[in-house]
Image (cartoon, rainbow, N blue to C red; front, side, top):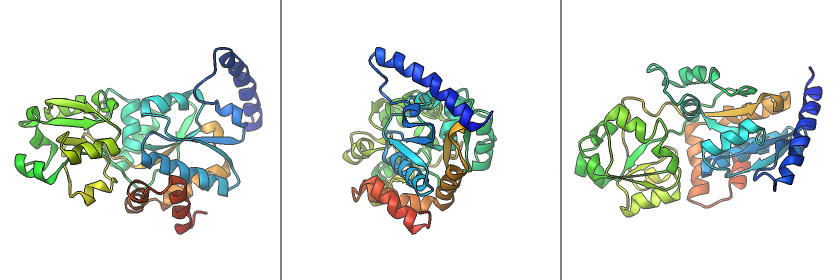
Length: 306
């Protein structure tokens, strides 16, 4: 069946569904079908780096003549993946290890931690009708991070060192981290670490960083590309048991939405991304307070993508 026929059938089915939704007061996310069969709806999670990557994908697609609509700050993975599976979102910037653990909550084999191994394992777990394009060299991992003073006080170099002292410490992270396999359950299972208190904040964002800086929390789940780690001289604890798998940036797309032009555009972004230049670009958003769309435009121009 050709893509045009598939798209037409999809539109007819979803237009019928849209009428039902309208009668019930509508859907909080506009359906991708409403944007037209040739429009790619690009979404993002509710943290700055995801929105920045969304803008990079969207602007690169537009440069290739692809019609695009963006839906930023949808929510956590638990929320935006439901939107993706339902067809409300066509394309998402993802992280190979985080996505794999979401799709395989019972865990992955112990020997799956390196980027290529994680990517291979991910292919067997993807939702039907979706695929990932080649992953980027850029990596942004979850971390447990502490201030230099806390590290010195408790002799902390790795997550293992938390086991005997975590009973006196407070962990701050997103609400979802409390239940995720690589979050609190994983810390208890892999390292025997149980914290005195858990404070739900945001996904490695300004609330978590501010709480760590003020001393409201002792340990923070912060992403490793966060410029605050360097500017505040914080200590990222080593993860010798690889609880946090490789987290290379990887595009997740609905197969029906992928065209040759779209593939060319998205792959160009992935090829341009490195951990270093992603960290630098994110600092412009987080520290300089520059709009993500502006930072994305500069990044693509500097790297010859558009």
